[in-house]
Image (cartoon, rainbow, N blue to C red; front, side, top):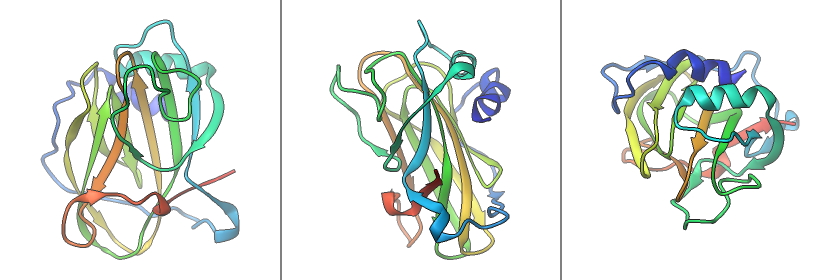
Length: 189
């Protein structure tokens, strides 16, 4: 599961930004339209404290399914507002999974913005890593090679400790950076 993915990277120093492009692998087999529901699947855990992705991964071992999230467009909240679709505003760990649709092949840039920690992959490649407690900040731009128009698996481990929360994704599909529309995310129920 995704929380194991996060544990692998939790010990790494999370320096925003990446040095080289990565080639994404499309989902195999491709999901059919009848299989898909809008948004991304999410499971939540509520640890006593969470300061690192490793803490989130440990807590997610007993995670429970939550309502799907609409996509990755959760702008910075006001303190006290719920984190994503969870039942709490603070000390939340989330394992997020599903698919993202790229409608064309090409080389693009993606960037994740989070408060607090995040480890993310698309098509089997790490595209975002920013560990620790921090404000709503970008993890750095990652160049991705999309070999074909298709659905690509996406997995994210995310945590929010205290204060405000955000989880966003931008891309440059179409020539300039901007928010990834919620409509390109889906999951299997």
